[in-house]
Each structure stands twice: as structure tokens, then as C-alpha cells.
Amino acid sequence: MQLKQTLKRAIENLTAHDVGSPRLNAETLLMFTLGCDRAYLYAHPERELTPEEDQRYLQVVGERASGKPSQYIIGHQEFWGLDFLVSPAVLIPRPETEHLIEAVLELVPDRTSALRIVDVGTGSGCLALTLAHEFPHAEVHGTEISNDALDIARINRERLDLARVKFHHCDLMEGLEVEGRFDLIISNPPYVSEAEPEKVQRQVREFEPKVAVFAGPTGLEIYRRLIPEAREFLAPGGWLLMEIGFSIEAKVRELLKGWSEIRTRNDLQGIPRVIAARK
Image 1 (cartoon, rainbow, N blue to C red):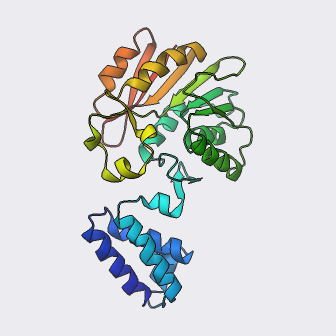
Image 2 (image 1 turned 90 degrees about the horizontal axis):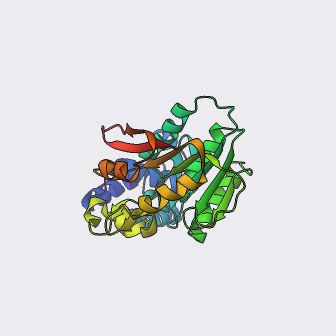
Image 3 (image 1 turned 180 degrees about the horizontal axis):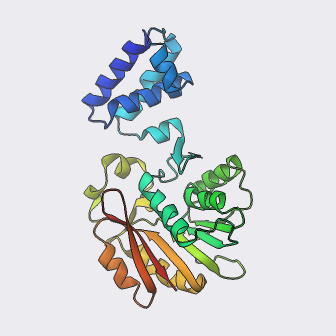
């Protein structure tokens, strides 16, 4: 079957299964199957797929039609212009989480600063490694409760040549053994209530790690633990920056009583996405 016919069949299949952006998904998976770029797809619509290529493509399109995120199928996701390995052990890095990076760069515009930073619940390592990339003189740490996620973070560290980033197996910051205090503590914690699973897409509920999505009955459980822990580990004048979910800004602000310079940063939809507070 020719490439253009194969692509048309995949788009129809994904559309029938209510997969968003069916053409983009179909093209991404075909590029993955053939090991080519999008320009190749457009330049060679008459190219015949081998039986093996066609079978492999049918398989990955079927996985996507079932709801499995394309990032888990191809094993990669871009974040802040960097390529990260991902697996079902880690939350898929999302564009809205880049607002955390933007908030840090706004607070600390000098990229030569010798900051001490810890990313709590690092997952794929996207926040810790991106900040290490942006601040070449910073000392950067990441904590993670999942050993499988730590394996992915360490692979990404090697791929990005950022060996100075240290990853630690611990629950939030409990048991973190480092000397001195931090200038910045950042986190994209789980913040969806277990009582409201419908607030996230089906593919998130069914395929992404629940420990990285659901916080507990209220959705505030991790914030309640992290905020007092962060106060202990921050240097005077240090900043805590956290991603927040839709509609919980006021509740998180309540938990930050006693902190100063509390501020939020909206995402592109005008929804508060990052909250920052100074010790």
C-alpha cells in the first residue's frame, strides 16, 4: 500500500476512535515507523510500504486508537526544546509545565547564578534537567519516590550530558540528605482529587502513572506535605514554585500563609498554572 493511502486509513481509524488531532497522530506514528521526518512523508506520497512496515504501523495505530498516548508509543517527548525519553513509568511532560521554567527565569534572570535547586517529584527529570541546562553553574537535585521513574530520569541525564544533576530516591523531601539549603524548590505535584477522575482525559486516567496524577481525596494532600518540608529546606529568601491545577489556587494560597511575595502565573488559557512563594 502507498504511503498516502496508509496515512488516510490511519486518520480514518483514529477519527473513528475519537482520538484528538488524528492527522498529527497518524503522521507522528508513521514517521516513527519509517524512521523519517515529516518532509519525507510529504515528498514521497507514492512510496510503497513493505509488508513489515505496514504491519508495524497498523500495530502502533491500533495502540493509539485504544487510548495509549503517542509519547509512550514512540518513547519520546519534547520539553523546552529538549528531547526526553518517556515511558509509562513517568508523567508525560506537558507544555503547560514549561510555565514553571518561565517563572524561574523571571525570578532569576542571571543564567550564571550558582543556584542550589531541587525538583521534588522529578519523574522524567524534565524540570531538573531543563534548569540544569539553563543554569550551567547551578547545583541541581531531583527527588522521586518511584524507582522506575528514577531510571528514566537517569537515562535522560546521560542523554543530555548533565551528569552533575543528582537524583535521590525519597518521598518528596523526606530523607533527602544534602548539605546546606536550597535557593529554589520546584515541583509539579499530583493535584487531581481521587473523587474527581473525570477532570482528566481518559488516556491520562488509564495510561499515565496514577501516583503522578492523583493526590488523594481532596487533591491537596501533596501540597500539605510539601509546603512545610520546603520551608525547612529553603534558605532565607528562597523560593518555592509549584504547578497548580484548575480551581485550586485559593486553597493552595491558604496553605502558604506565613510565606511572602505569593504570586501566580497564568497559562495561555488564562488559568493560574504556577504559584510561587518566598520564605
